[in-house]
Image (cartoon, rainbow, N blue to C red):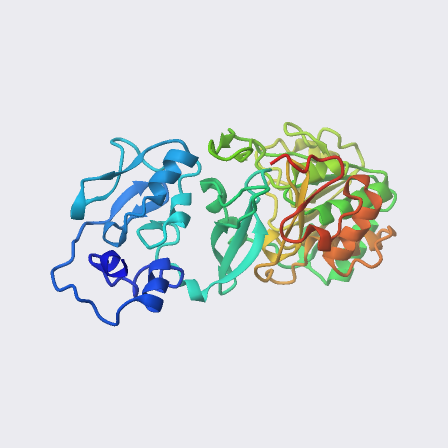
Length: 432
């Protein structure tokens, strides 16, 4: 069988993206002959663009038909088939059809050889050069389990991580290609304070002191990103409680795109990972006007929220602005304090998906400059304000405090959550 599979298979291993994670390569090394008995010219066909993120390298195909069966049975959009017969057989797509469906790029993961390859990952790295880290996709509230693959402290690919209770073995195309922002170059790298109308870099302790001074006797109005971890939102909740403030968030939305062959799996309308977590921790959703609750004299705290596309005139009510984020919001007055934090690829924490399943993600790369994990920065800020944030040296310790204070998270810990997740109190464990 190995000889038959290899009759027309080219020796592409030195240039094939699949090398190092190719099933045919592994079996040939373990079981194959040292040399080939085939002397005739091998079949040759040009590479075909299947649309979307998929290229079809016909010469490498062993006609296992996994891709055809996935599109037929799981995606339920039968655009692939086996055309021709015998030694001329190949995978073809239907006339005027492309693999642009929301979940079509899963055929790349299903292909056991390098016949279906990703345009996005093409010639980027070798499999053995990559570090792999368990994570959670931030593309929507489904909370699909993923693997972040990094090379030289840069995220180069995101792939699905199997979890039968959430996403089975799949990841939508939008999610798998939504990783470039993790490498964005325009990051906030140093804590800064406003001096003479401009921002100047300072030590962290000075920045905390200035933030505490700005919020002394004032109400903190916090606009938080629903892609912040449960731990970060919990510490923001403490800051809100200490100042008698208010917390809100907004979430981008889009059309829902289910995977028909898998129950309760879809690219969800809410395009953020921790919408449910934000709601459970007391933040109010206001997509249209997140600054509507801002009162004269409040301190506006933007927690990884850029307010892009909004009318920022209401921000003028604030006595001071504090930015806690990864990138600087455009169009705002000069803030009083800027605190740089890590993004989801650069820290550890948890998200709560739309079904109430709490899931951990791990750190995949280092944060730039002096940026700190969000829970670390916020714990020290809460301490500077006089809030109780002792023993917050690890995200697991912050989560333990969260579980002790917030009834929905009671009984959960990093140990019980593991890398598969666990539902909050009152959530249906069998929802998936």
